[in-house]
Image 1 (tube, one colour):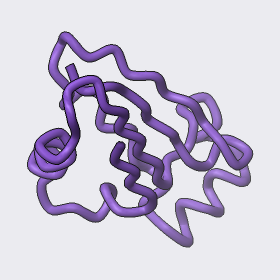
Image 2: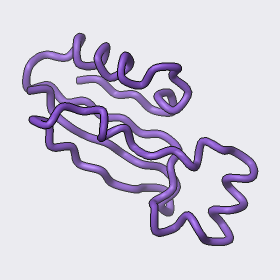
Image 3: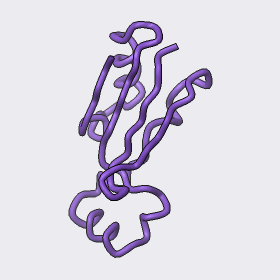
Length: 91
């Protein structure tokens, strides 16, 4: 199992970060990533504008588009929809 909390948004190369997480995870192992990222439907609210003004990382989206097609990730928004949780298993 790999857990990354509060890191991937600041990586220079997200794809390399995901590849490293996958490299150290056994086949069938769980990878869980959480970081700042507002739920898309909430980005045009007063709270969202305040958060983004204080920390631009709240504009980030889960890096699910960088995963291979065979992976079916689960995305959940937590902490009043201000952080994302991305969970998937290594094929």
